[in-house]
Image: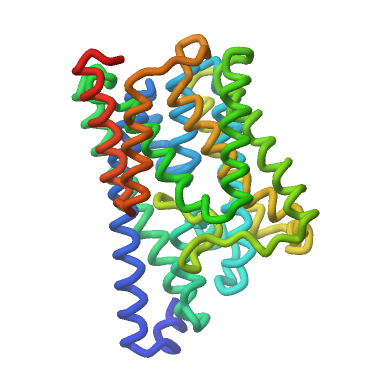
Amino acid sequence: MAETVQTLPAERRTEVLRQSWSVGIATGLYGISFGALSVAAGLDLWQTQALSLLMFTGGSQFAFVGIIGTGGLAAAPAAIATATMLSIRNGLYALQTRKFLDARGAKRLAAAQLTIDESTAVGLAQPEQPAQKLGFWHTGIAVFLFWNLMTFIGALAGNAMGDPKVYGLDGAAVAAFTALVWPRLASTTARLTAALAVALALVSSPLVPAGIPVLIAALAAVALGLRSAAHHEPPLEGEDGELPGSDPVP
Amino acid sequence: MSLTVAVLLACVLCFGTKIIGYLVPGSIVDGERVSRITTLLPVALLAGLIAVQTFGGDEGELVLDARVAALAVAALLLWRRANFLVVVIAGAAAAALVRLAGLG
């Protein structure tokens, strides 16, 4: 990134780095709750750490361990499908970030793994291309480091705690999912989607194996997505000019 | 399928969703309809998860227990614009306290 240093004034560089690392540290801290919930759901320390290292997309990680926690190994196919669908937005972010990253080969693989809500948001928030690049990489690396460190600490703490229900860890999972969906509920269409999804999940829950109700709930997005397209509503956007669907976790 | 295999498979597929954005021609996913559905997809999945994690019993039957308190406290705190970690810890505390009081 030598050319980045040359074309970006020192004060702008400092500004972008400060922004990137504060976002990275703040977001990475949430890894502690993921680590604790993951071991409470029955994953071991290494499986938990593998998710933070290799999956590295918070919503998908929480969903994966949540479904395994409810349905065990039998629910693994549903857990895998849900985690994958929640990660599709990262691919959409990549369509934006690739315009300023211009990464090839191994660097492109690294960029792909670091393409998450925060790195995309910080990158796109910069007006000039060298700063976009700098912001993306530093935010991605900062979140990656702290998210993984905190996952490890959370998993150790979770292992030491014993029966997770005594500490209300199942309540923590509910709260975490609520916090993840909250910023996405800015539009009426999003709220209707959530309401329909809840209804579909509750109605189907007694009838189908664990994990499947969440996949059935996904149909709400298809139904409301087609409906709103037909009504030509304005584009779906989050509050405060955030990316649509930006997460409080990676 | 062992749990480790499931973990690794999910990781590979999630990486696939990321890398594909760097490889495909942009026009494929630029459609308005597709982008609306993909924007709403996380909302539907997360809302569905909240529903089953709050009300789902061991056999998938619907139950009312301490987790409802966690949901209520979380929603209240988020409405008050609380931080993510605060919400998660308060959710755990609410469920634990209700259980301690013998109410579920």
